[in-house]
Image (cartoon, rainbow, N blue to C red; front, side):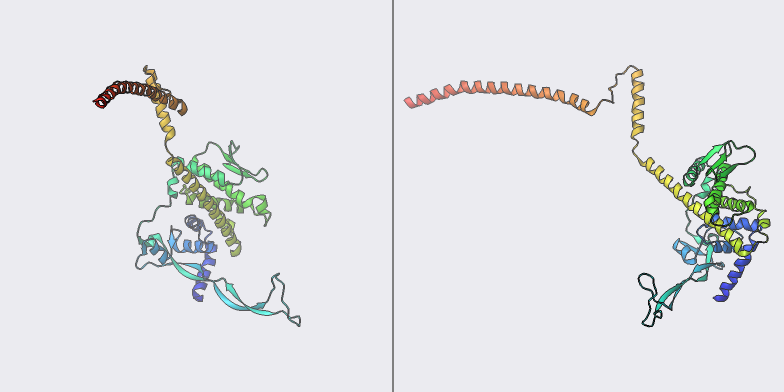
Length: 382
């Protein structure tokens, strides 16, 4: 295992130097765009072993859980995976306040503690091209190319996630945009295509994220070329993630920029690019998902307003043809009061009729009663 780790580590160190050749660098950025969740070390290893052609990687078990299986004879892509382990270590005992506990002789008291040691092991991962099985749902990033509505949605998301204002203006000269550190704002040349507008916005957002005053103050000031390499690389990665045409990106100058730099310095730059791109992608994804859910919620609401518009159109057309149309804007109380009046009259008529009937019934009873009494009297006399 240790020999295997050394082999992969050596490949990684050499790869950091080799990756700054134009084509290799672009291949690495492609992997960053497709798999932003991987560490920079694993992104470099995947790019080196697949020439940047890998699009989606999972472990053997991971593909199985997704309903796919690795084809027979496929060779795994070697990457690092965390393999922490614990050891028992004798350490100075500390009290609740974090101070040393001393014995009667004034010596530190020792105790055995369990300590976690961070370590890594070499594991295999496989690209989707090495598997067969159930279709994987499209992530949806390719839908942006040539789709104006989606570009508008993306631009809206960029504006919301950017911590400084983004505005369009007529910029003199050939500049497509700029980030002003003093004014803390981003300006974009007006009148450009949607694709170029998004690219420029991402480039300037990368400058703001990586080269703002408060960020630069924490470390050494970088050269203008270093800043451009970082900003352009981040913009490329984010554009590639969302399926925006990146054919006009060129990184021929990175070989000259990286010449003479030590591996740790180069890896730090790659880590910076990877972290910035990954953070921007996740923030934009979250915002796009939020907008999508809001849109779906809006669609699912009752179409009351449309019905009202239709009623208004029908009413207008009817009135133009000379028909009398009842005003639908009258309040419910007015309609209810009007509807209740006829029944009230009917109730009064009903009451009068019942009184007449009762009088008639009374007269009949009165007419019949004497006859009965006479009959009774006659019977008594007899």
